[in-house]
Length: 291
Length: 349
Image (cartoon, rainbow over all chains, first blue to last red; front, side):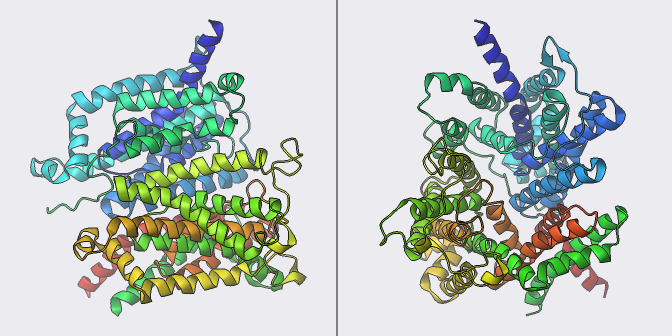
């Protein structure tokens, strides 16, 4: 029983950064902008959260710092994708590269370190659960209502499915898309903040370690819906948290194969083997307004 | 003609602007940008060793750049270069170090096998796209992570030197017969004939694209799949084939890392760096032209190699070159920005 509870808690913890980053990606893609840069936004979020927490001595200001940094990165992506109608995949790739270079560069400049920041204040816990984790699940649940029950949510889906129709009824397509993309970066930044000042109390080089891409997988596997993304993130979190347990029972399977599971499942979902995943129809397509 | 010139101006402008931004950052750190760039340049280009290092670093980038370019021509974005490089490298290491048959353990055979492995790996995404309409960006990202995990498995279990209990996760060195000839052994930089093979690949890709029916069909599919279909082109076949060929090009880059001797002819942790992703930058900066890919691969390789010498001689961290590379890609992605600015100028004239 005790083991089950600790497994459950570990699953919730491991799933949290994936979940919030995937929810962020969902906002961007539902509104029609592909976001491959989640990994970089998350990494920038993790770094900035740690740096702000270090200099202000307040981890909660650090959370804000992480979200702002993620949002700024997303802002660049938004301007390129929306205003200049650039290739969204290219822009995302550049953002990932930028984050990976910039964070290590700044580690050297600010702390004269090559691998990590000094210890910084971390966010508190409620009954052993990091406040960021609670915040993340709160936002994830809220996102369902936001996307389906509010006017802004409806508009987001409209500009992602049929921008021309949305434009015709007077929705400012560009504005809604800017909002969605920047929000996606802020949420990825929150996921990053959890890594540096929630789970740990320092930033380490490349600490997002592919979670932004797992989030992308969770987004696709969860079919671009909040409920689906939640389920997918929990499943992927479980694959991560339960690894040692799984290893005990199936020791003939090397751990690397267990780590492949999220990606293989996502491929299968895309192929329609486990329920077909279909992207928002205008995702990746710039919108040319006539006025 | 004027448009073509403008097209060529954009990469040059992008590099120039990135270097200026970089100079700003260096200046802000209290270093002299001129001094830093001096070491960057001399570290990459002055002296036999520097040149050998730069061209050695450029070799896999030419292959992965060609890979991305090839898929681009068919209208696809191959983000899966990293996985394809890994698969090519693993096959090269496996056959080169474990197969004792002298007929198989031969550098030419191994290159072919690596190419086939990359073809098969990328063709998974090609098949998913052709038959089921799965977007290749997502599928190739997933395949990258499957390959990266498979790499760790292979280095820790079946291919590990000294068996699963061996000292470190790396393969034994490949046999002599499997090695690529060294071009500048006096520099001890492992600069090998793989670079010449990369140049041959450039010519072959150019030839396929410009002089063959296959190239014509690939470009037709890339331009407009619907009208290509109407013209009687087998679009699913061309789609899967193009991504497969792209995969084999990237895999050859991976094979060169192992057979060329960069890591004492072993496959070790991190040997594939980020060459698959670098290919995206190479193809973009090279404006999707094979010759452009060579030039931009050499540029990015020079930044990496020169960056180390700059970090050694000044207080500027070498990661600034990654930032420069990112800025260059961002600027290329924003090429419409340049076009708008250039066109606005024309109006005001």
